[in-house]
Image 1 (cartoon, helix red, strand yellow):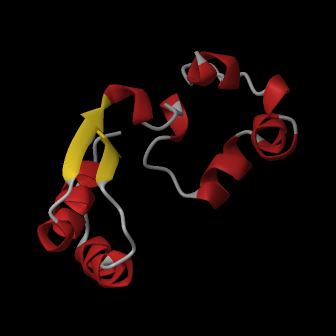
Image 2 (cartoon, helix red, strand yellow):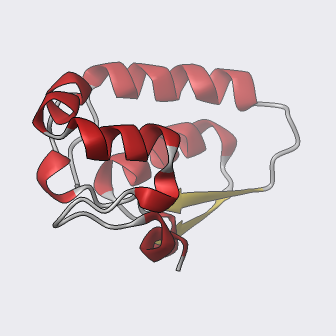
Image 3 (tube, one colour):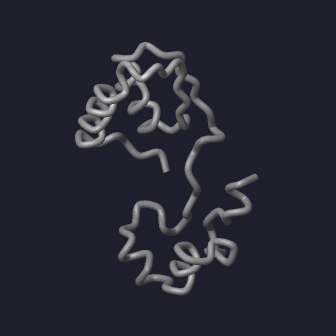
Amino acid sequence: MNSVLTELGRSQARSAATHLKGQGITCAYSSSLGRAMDTAEIINASLDLELIASDDLREMSLGPWENVLISEAEKRDPEQFGHFRNAPELFALPGAETFPELQT
């Protein structure tokens, strides 16, 4: 889901930039989703790196679990939640991406 970067996320990105400065990093890759790009751009403001955005780095689509607290997802479908956490090869939540789909 393409959610916005929170103020906490912005603060964490500024902190990451401080820690990454002087580490010899020459290039940065980011998911093309908005909050990931916002994070990368905040960090990159201090590092001045080549920044490459890629759709291939987007996170897994969880369908009906998008924007849902972990506790709520577990309550809604404990079997699939257990698969997601402990047996990803068995995870098959209708409307969500499977792990093999993610890998592809």
